[in-house]
Picture 1 (spheres, rainbow over the protein chains, first blue to last red):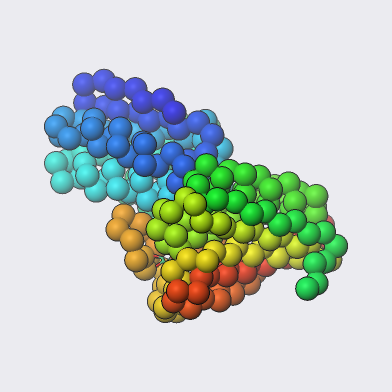
Picture 2: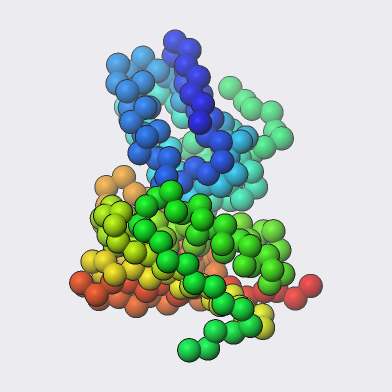
Length: 107
Length: 142
Ligand SMILES: Nc1ncnc2c1ncn2[C@@H]1O[C@H](COP(=O)(O)OP(=O)(O)OP(=O)(O)O)[C@@H](O)[C@H]1O
Ligand SMILES: [Mg+2]
């Protein structure tokens, strides 16, 4: 798991499994980074994520709900086909600006 | 008990680090049965959702409790059963409603994913008597 921070942007790269096992720790780290409301964009880069389930989706939506009230944006990039399918089934693909693997990221 | 052509039973503590082992066992077992890669991804999600539910809801995070995953291979079908001995579900119909969740910050999508990735879902549960989630997935012809 790698978290890169610039002034107003955080990029989270989870490697391997994005499941219940990593969620509590990742949530605590991000909550710390978000608490002063300076971060306006949180980007989840799934290029090294081999598995995600509802626990991972739940965490990403939770971060969206934390940042949205002060105008923050959350995006998910480099989703594999199975991962992208879950975001679509959950109806979260547009809300989370989902970009699939192999496509140019926008914005 | 009919165990089919192949049978594997995994018993483990309700520690979230064991989710990966449960998924891997199901992936290897279903690969051996000839499931496609897409099907195997779906099987992993179904196992992950049901085992996570046992840990989070059934046992409320008590890592000393035991979850079992039982896999049986039949001619053209994989049967997966996840059992816990936890609090149970008082209203199974309600639990199956998309986006219903008893827990804060959960999406209520676990059973939605399971239902769309498997061909049959059967939940046996009663308050205080644990939960048994049985999922079947058919192998499509070549
Ligand atoms: N093994 C279990 N023991 C007790 N209750 C359960 C069990 N499995 C599911 N439930 C109940 O069923 C509800 C729905 O489960 P489901 O997996 O669909 O959603 P969730 O776990 O709440 O959210 P998500 O899976 O999106 O994180 C749960 O909120 C819980 O109340
Ligand atoms: Mg669940």
